[in-house]
Image 1 (cartoon, rainbow, N blue to C red):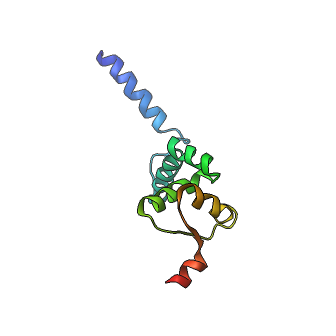
Image 2: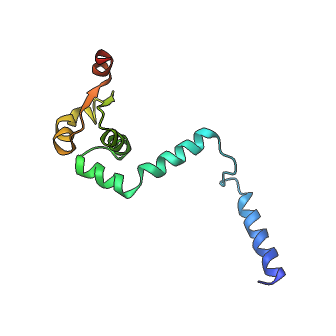
Image 3: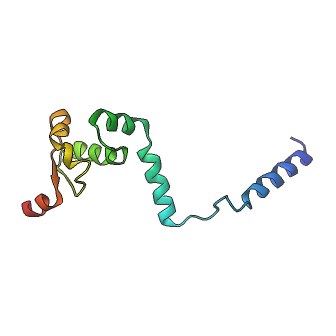
Length: 105
């Protein structure tokens, strides 16, 4: 690469970097949300969500409960608690409400 080409490339990169729509600093929350979004969109979680009839956002939590063979406590009445029997039958994960979890311990 010629020196002139390298200078043009650097200028182009820096001009993009200075655009208002390019985010150059990330707060811990931004980073956490980016990682969370990346995890939720992994193909294996999307397939699991489809197979179980759950939301993709819940798939990583279900996987953790399965890996550690522990009940999954949730307050999500609309999603996980509404299909807890199906999930238990398919993969053996017990889903309980947060209130049930508190009464156990």
